[in-house]
Each structure stands twice: as C-alpha cells, then as structure tokens.
Length: 388
Image 1 (cartoon, rainbow, N blue to C red):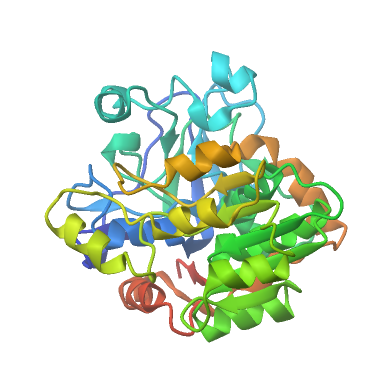
Image 2 (image 1 turned 180 degrees about the vertical axis):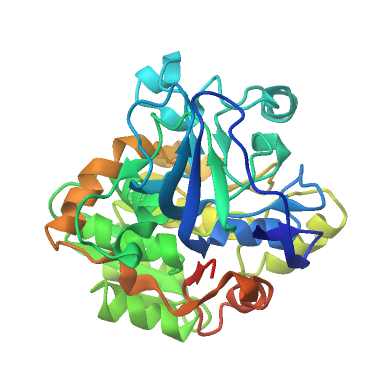
C-alpha cells in the first residue's frame, strides 16, 4: 500500500509499504477513505517530537471502511463506515473507566520511555512516535486499529466524510478545550491560535454559552475565518498589543478564560528570539510565548486551558502571576471517547458542519508538498487527503 512516511525533519515521502495485518484478535483493518494533516503533525515535521524512526507512517486523523476484523471484535463488522479517534484506549483500566481515556494504562507498549521523560505514560496515539507506542498512522491506504471495539464510532447517517472526519481529533479537541474553561453565561473567552483547533474552540465556546470570544492570530485567512465563520472578535498580534487590547475589551479585568491553541511552536512576542536560541542550544524544548501571555492576560480567578501540544521543558514562566491570580490550569490529550457521540449528534442536527475548516483537498500522493504548504500557514487552514 501507499503511505506518508517520515524520514527526518521536513522530509515526508509517500512510499510503498507492507499492508497492515491483524496482530491481535481485538484488531480491525480499515481501508482509509479520508485523512488529514493535523497541526500536531507539524511538530513532527519540524523535528520537535522525539522517538520518531525513519519510515514511520504518519497521521492520526482518519476514517474509512472496515475490511477485516479480528475474532474477538464484536461491535464492528466488515463494511462499517467508521471514524477512528486519535487516542488508543483499552476501555478497562482505571483511567478509561474514569472517563480519562487518553491516560489509558494499557495501550502504550513503550510506556517505560514516557515514564522516564514524564514520570508516567498515557495511552498510545496513532502515527505519533515510538514514545506513544509506535503505531502506524492513518495517512495511508489501510491502517490497523487495535482495541477496535473501544475506539471507532460507526457513521450510519448520510453525512459526508468531510463532515465527520474531524471527530477523529480537532473537533473534540477544540470542544474539550472550551469545556475545560468552565464557561458560564456572560463569559469572555480569549483564544490564541486560529488554526483548526482554535477554530473549533471558538465554535465550541459559543456552544457552551460564552457571550464573547476574542481570537488572536496574525494570518489574515485564519483571522477572517474566525470572524466570518466563528463570529469572534479578532486581534492581530503583529499589529496591536494583545494584553492591552484584552484589558480594554474587558473593562480592565481580563478574559474569564484563555485558551492556548498554539503550543510548543509559538511565534511572536519579544521573547521569540530568546526561545528559538535556547531551542537551538538544547536548553529549552518548547516555545511557550502564547502560554506566558495567556497567564498574564487572564483575569483573577480565571482558567487557562491548554489544548496546544507541549513536549518537554520551558522556562521564564510567570508562575508568580499565575499564583497571585489564583488561576486554574486544565490541559492534556483529549479524552476522545467522551465526545464522539455527543458531537456527532451536533453534526447530525446541523448545529455545525465541521468541513468549514477545510482549505485544501488533495490526494495522499501529494502529502509531501502539502505538509510544506500547511507548515507555511499562508492561505492554508486544513488539508484533507484521499488515498486514491
């Protein structure tokens, strides 16, 4: 089969690789009908995620048709149309039973690697390094899905692939980011990053009762989408002092909640050159400029929600401000299984059509050039690919 494979920073190749096989009686094989490049994939593309090996198959946003199931799979059958969540969960451990699905104890065969790095390991992820299990991803013609009775959701309606694909990651991720803000009627939410997750966080914040959403970015097409599609007020961080503007817009108090939908590759701010230099010297792994500003902007007693990926160690954090303000921090990989059915219901009721975020449609054969395009962010909000 054909698959998008990683060969180093900035080096993505579409190659012929062996077809996946049933390895465990709880596996299923999915023929991929639509897949996407995620902003998190760009962290791999840019060399910030350790544990990658040459030839690894990328991709964790995908859906398709079940073509084979293991002998112990009971909930799926050949021919089912499914969306597969990017997190892999067993459904039986302490964390899965507590609804904290992304923290699963049993799906990462390389758990000891993350334990050395972070002190503990969460669940495995598709196509996201050997730190997270080394599972082949879904930017391919076929993919093996372990724990198939736990993860995939069957799509039985006539919704298009583009309407449901983003249940695999960015819609639930944006929604959980907003949910973590504990939004109350009348609240103002500030969101840094108008990429795909930021766009869904904007829409989700309004779904959950926010009165105002202020979206912050610098790319004109993303700010336009946030304003026109998301009905957010927008700020270009390259043109204004965001902290001063947020104070002015909230009567000097600050937003009730701030969402960092950027993560470890933040741009802008006077400290950007400092963070880049420390990264180059291996003295800092992440660029936390957005997180610093979210802490400084948030009102006293507010919440900082972090769906943006962080991978290691950061410094120069204003923890004194966070402590003095009494801020609440909520973050982490999305507990996907809590959101698949509720958000599918919202799509089926026509409350939202997630395909609004797509800017580029292409084939898997063009993955390399579209990784580069998406990484430039210029005029590119979301890339979806068909394997053929």
